[in-house]
Every structure is written in structure tokens, then in C-alpha cells.
Image (cartoon, rainbow over all chains, first blue to last red; front, top):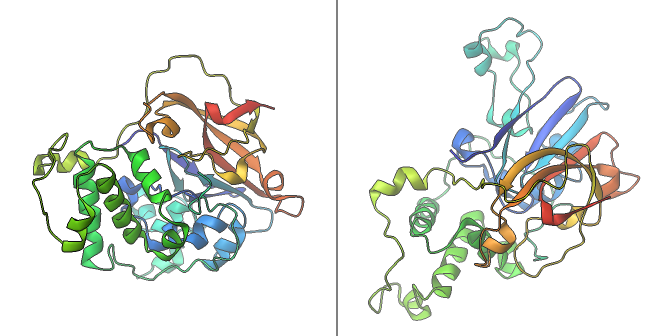
Length: 120
Length: 218
């Protein structure tokens, strides 16, 4: 693995989102090859100027006062979002929590699944 | 270079359209292009910054109209042509027309693990870091016609150094064969209103990874 993989933590105050405006830098050792949308002009152009609008495209609406922190991967550092533990998952084991984590929630364009989505 | 690849802040590209259950590759040729890039990258004929520069150097209309792997393919073709490893008539005919030029290194299956591992670009520091976390810095207004990793949308704007990421290969020189010249790398955080004006969302901040030569004290 290349060096400098940095995890950035989502909290109830801050939501992190990762982009590469110049090309397609992505933590693919961990997440696999990036999806087409991550490498596309709409995402690369808008993520740094209108991140809330981009989140809307993903069906994600954050509270108006949540800070949004966008990380543009312009060097060989790579970023991975640590999603926030959803309500109802208090006391869950690491393995059970992992079942709620999605790829998009680690890019910051999605939220983890909720415990009530996990009943199946 | 101020190319169309430098997309941060551009308007008019429309909505982001995620694809449900997206396959890793949409056609077999995409996987082949990926493999060709890895295998030829392993020959040491170019570095990652030269690869990026070759994609940025595609004609703007070609860059915008080509899919991701099509751009990879065209960039690879360009790098091979530039180094006389292939010729135009060979591309046209679809096969080799003369004895191949020796490569710096030859890719074998023993290299697979190595080429699928991202390279390491951290280097020992040759001078102390000029900035520290909390420093106010301005992204310099530079407009090189060659490769740079300082996006246009931050140039001339003031931000705060948030992290010092160590010393790394400097893409601006590595991309044009002028050596690694390792430089300190910083995470610099900008308020959206500084970048996009007073109407911007006050809850948004954007950071870039900026090499020391991109920055000046503010």
C-alpha cells in the first residue's frame, strides 16, 4: 500500500467528502476501483463548489448547520471517510457495524445504512 | 497546465448520476486497458506524473468526450509514441512493423504484486518545513503550461495550514523529467466564501494538498 492513507471522521457536526478534481485519485487499495461517477466531470466540478447539491444527487440531505468538509486529493495522500455510527447501533460489535458501512459512506457521498434497514 | 482536466468549480456538467450495481468494468476492453497501463507502467519508461500529464495533454474536446478508460488508452498511446516504442503506422496497421525498442525493464508476472501496489512518494526532507499548522497561507498565482497539482480554483486564495504531510516527490518537476525535487506537502483548508464569494455556503470548507512551492505566507 502507498503511504499516507488518512481516515477522516464524520461526527454530528462535520461531514467529510472526498474528491479528486484533477483526475481520479482514490483509495483503491481499500475501496477497489472507483465508480464511474467519481471520475466524471459532474462530480469533479461540483464537489468543491456545491457539495450539498452533489449530496442531493445521492439522496442525502444533511442538517443545514452541519459543516461540510471537502478533501480534494491533489497529491499522493488518500482519504477515507469514517462514517458516523447511526442511531440505534450503540453497543454494536465491530463486525455488526461493518455490515452498515457502504462504499459511498466511505467516500462521503452516502450515509451508512441504518440498523432498521438491516433486519433481513 | 490550465487544461479542462482542472474541473473544480466548473458549471454546466449536470447532475452526478450514480449507477446502481455498477460493474467493475463495463466492457472487456476497459480491463485490458487497465492491465496494459499497469504492465507498461512497470517498465519504468515513465512515472505517475508523466502519465497524468499525458492525459491532461489530450485535446480538450477529446478529453471531455472520452470515457475514463478511453482517456487512459489515448494517454498510453501518446506516451508510447513519444518514446518511439510504437509508431503511427503500427497503430494504423494494428500490429508491430519493426523490431521493438528495448524497454528499461521488462514486465513479468512476478511484478504483478508490485504494480498493483500504489507507489510510495514520501522522501526524506532536505530542509525544514516553512509552514506549520495554523499558518495563514496564500496559494500562489502560478500558471505553468506544464503539469501542476495546484488547481486553478484555489490560486490567489488564502487558507489555513491544517496538517504537514511530510516531504513528497514534486509532481511539477517529475512530470517533465526534471527529477523528484521532494517538497513539503501541506493540507491547506479554505473557506468556501473565500473561494466562491460571499454567496457561498458558510458551512463548507475545502482543502487541497499543496506542495510548499505552491504557497506563500499571507
